[in-house]
Length: 376
Image 1: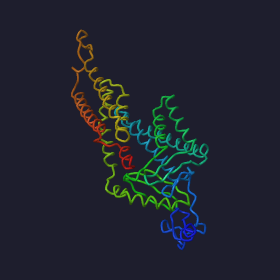
Image 2 (image 1 turned 45 degrees about the vertical axis):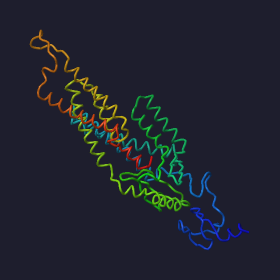
Image 3 (image 1 turned 180 degrees about the horizontal axis):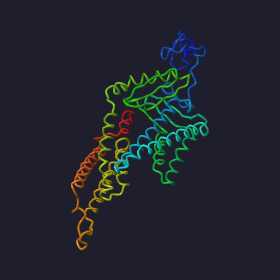
């Protein structure tokens, strides 16, 4: 008898699974029009409850602005990084006339890579990427379930290992790290809702953290749950109380590049191998944007620079004018040499201070800042 009365007075929204009155024409939770089949509880995804949504998606690659935009931004970022690195190297060697042709070549390579990426999306992935989203009271989780994509990420990494290409190794590792993304409501982010594209974009103060793709059937439910959880946990309030780290990160980047420039000049004047300043610049920028632990590598590279300069300064040379006279290299340093050593010393001092601060947590990398905002 009680069960019969319940069926007559209670229904369930087929859009968000909320309990509603049988007389209601619209769901009070998501606004969806009550369907005739709303009398029965909805069938949820395996493992899901009324407080949890789990759904699989096939995201179009070539027709998705988020996917293509992400690929384009990554390639342009790589172009800027490589162009900046080559400019510092060529400029420190005085080869300014080679910079423009080099930038043109890098632009052509970037365009070629974009074309290859489009072909791979169309032919290998068939314009579809399979993913899974899980939404619950703790947060939201993204999982890459596409076996082709997961296999490709690992192939890129191992091909980089076998061929000795650090770019491929790094790309493979980064891709694998993004196969699972978890964001909790204890973070500091906001949501942007787009009902036309059926997506909810979760972002912090300077970039998109996660794009949630929904189905036409569950978009209203997903958007409603996210909105309620952000409000209940104060996630959006923490987002509003934070400032963008981008100005500080750009400032650290410029200081790091400026501090590394004298190291490149040392390679020509004091016989320091060019590989050392290149590695120092790359790992220092990695410390700014990715992992503070690379500060240890920076300190080691600075020590190698100093050791190379000391070896060169103490090296013995025979005088061209009087072959019987032997002198140390430092004895013939001129004012420009000493000025360069002072500049290099200032640069090394700043890089050491920054590296130690990054290791101790005084300087937060872009990745560490994003992890904080994601609640991890």
